[in-house]
Length: 244
Image (cartoon, rainbow, N blue to C red; front, side, top):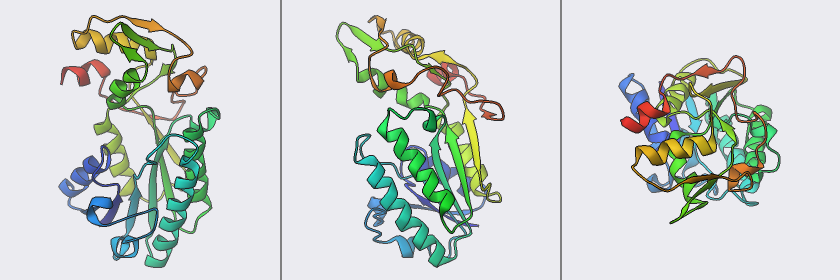
């Protein structure tokens, strides 16, 4: 099967390409470095020529008010080109609970991306993942200084990027879901607790101060980011990932 992986050189995309290639598929990575600009559409027709599936893992360059326009334009371009090329399956990666956090403009933008895909002409699948283990370091850096790290007690169920990529690869080689598959890690933490585990593993003596107004995830309440019933639960635990 020929699969075009848009954003195929990034954190998840590069892993998806590796998995699909090992499984015998012709997985072709596309990104600005390969000559594809999804925002302008440059190189898109060529990228989709002969492809049976397109996986869109392109992310907005910002999390601010510009993100909805980015996802609208890129999805419109992608679906138009995919329909013209006869692509039979379009896959995107989104966020568990995105529709439950309206105060975050980036999450609203991801819901917009989902809605455009659902309304489009190409059979589709949506994979919604919880927060990646790999995002813990930048999340802490937003509210950290030499004296400590401030994090809210937001409940999250993080997952390894390798497990996300595996799930995306599996969905992309199956029949279109015409719906959504949720995936999550095996453990639930509060974000401040996860910060303490991370710093301890790194030998960092700074304290983590619980501050429910700190950082991006301060806008999240309750169990909005926790996977519900029916989610696929990955096996890799956070401590296993840290030790690796």
